[in-house]
Picture 1 (tube, one colour):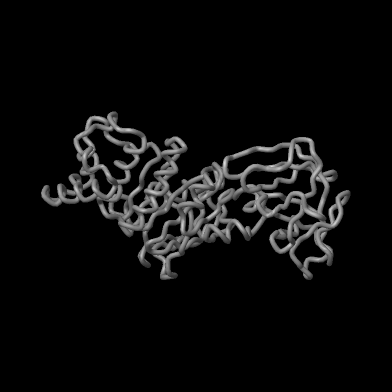
Picture 2 (tube, rainbow, N blue to C red; picture 1 turned 90 degrees about the vertical axis):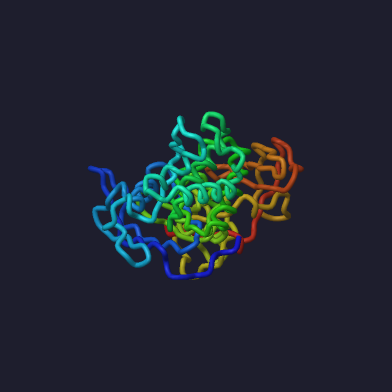
Amino acid sequence: MSNPPVSEPLVSIQGVSRRFGDIRALEQVSLDIRQGEFFALLGPSGCGKTTLLRILAGFEHPDSGSVTLDGADLLAVPPHRRPVNLMFQSYALFPHMSVAKNIAYGLERERVPKREIRERVDEVLATVGLTGLARRRPHQLSGGQRQRVALARAIVKRPRLLLLDEPLSALDKKVRAEMQLELKRLQHEVGITFVVVTHDQEEAMSLADRIAVLSEGRVRQVDAPVPLYERPADLFVADFVGANNLITGVVTTDGLRVPGVGVLPCPASPDAVGDTATLAVRPERVRLGADGGLVGVVRDVTFFGGTTRVAVDVAGLDRPLLATVAGAAVVRLGEKTRVDWSGAEAVLLGPV
């Protein structure tokens, strides 16, 4: 995925905090979102991502911190006057209105001339592929079509910033995959900056130019998908984004020494020698049947079609090592096998 050119941020969030009684929803959050970017807020339930989205929309106000859009104070602008639109998880379509009327609703409220409304509605219907369905009611549409109507209603007002709260969660797996492609195409075509909230790592990785990972109200890492996956900043990100093998030990000049297991390959880290640290190695970097490495017993083999996930029990480790191989695996349940990886393909996180 190509990243957009670096430019001045469209949105700048600096030191934003928000509490609800004893609950800390956001703690000193600072983020920049660039013009024309597809930006994802990723994290588990309760991490603060929806609170941050509602602050951008104007439905919440931070206890401290600033939010600017094009350098101007966004917090001073009431929600209905912000060049920002929020697409709700439920889509919130009016059941008694046609598709065209649902899309036109916001423009009619703003008293846009009728001719311009018709032109803009027709244009956006074509953009989302619903031209022939303008007269239908929401109950006559599929889930994917209703999602397109909600998107069309959100972009017809031409906001500077479109906020999407778990936009694909109500769709089944196949339709969700199709709509991920559609969202990305649409975002590039209309040129609006998208900010999506999701707890789905695959969704964030497939859609976003950059991702902010949040946990307990704090930003843990902001990065493009590939470096986020390959070089997590801390243990939380390593464990939350994708599958990972996490092994704790003591850093030596030869590798990571794990009691009862031995010395495992890890990146060279002279400054960390003697420290307790955690090694993170992705399952697709683990080799089965290697000449060296560790000996283990195959505990589970799961075939996913294009790949197979193999879990290997190794004496001394508190959880199985995971390996992902292309196609069908050649190992069987209960067999002994060797597992190994290159230290350069792992990440050292610590001290813990």
